[in-house]
Image 1 (spheres, helix red, strand yellow):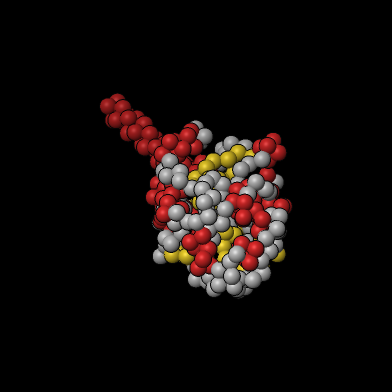
Image 2 (tube, rainbow, N blue to C red):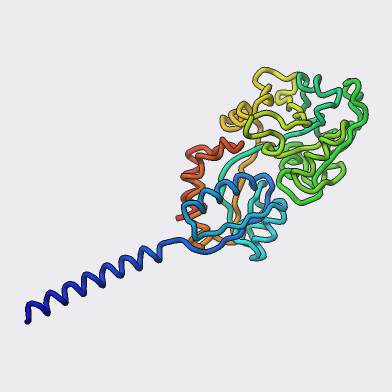
Length: 316
């Protein structure tokens, strides 16, 4: 009888141990919702990451909305969302309010023009210097293409962004300005400014790369042209500057450090303080590991390996 009692006790202990193990495994399973808002620039990539992450974690729901980097920062600092998509440098004021950042990819802001504008063909071989862009977008000393001895284009119909956004801030920063310095008719969002340029033969604007190209084909979106940047200022587009016919040429130049930053720039997720939400931490870790495989195929630029390792340490 005594031996039976011992056996029963051992079995009970084993069963309890197995039960605890199952309970631990169950408690490790991610479950719940997180919300993200912010930059149009990161929105398509964030959607892809969320889609793949939720496949592996079916009890997790990630809600994502685009409204501009400024809205994302406001939302996250006010506790309205768990993370913000962000596409410019974080200001000291934002850091003082608790903004914590982690880089996840890179992209670029590009000057755009209606593809049917008569000056576009010449611009593709001539390009514009930083100073010429500045005179168009900021000081408006140049309001007509004839001022650059380009014939047939006529007056420049300039568009900018009406929402606080990283694209406008970084494009202005390339020209030594800020978003509020940019001239032109304000249009909301990346899709909005792309449509405005497409629908006005004299239209000139700027877009994040993902809205200027079709990432599936690698070709420039129908109706849009990209004005090459004359990086060395010699009045023509040299072979090493001729990067715009295919998206991979451009992203490769950014990856290899052969394109100016800005307008190329890192893209970030922002939290209010270092995150302690298990889903947020798991999602960010996923992005910097498994998620990097979808960066280039989605039209973005992967972070250098050394930078990825640096960013991952922020999650420790």
